[in-house]
Length: 121
Image (spheres, rainbow, N blue to C red):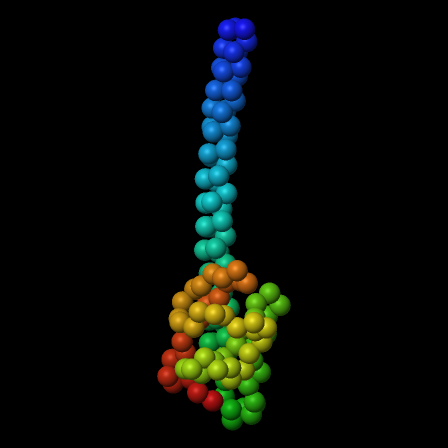
């Protein structure tokens, strides 16, 4: 009986040790990859916002007369006033946080960029 208890005890300790040695690096890897993915997504959002800002800067009402707001397949964007009321938006559900910066919510990630004062149509 004592040998069986000793064998089970050592088997349990060995199993737990192996599980910790395998699961701890896996957890750290997954957490790190999630962090890297969030940084990549934030960079993509910033790049898309720069494309929108550049198209607004390059707009000349004397040439075309109307501004065609840029649309993207994988991103939704919009223009809001200082009270966060939509001027033009393609966003199906507006973000809950209404301050500038990168925000993560359950519904998705948002990048809110304040427009410089000189960009009015």
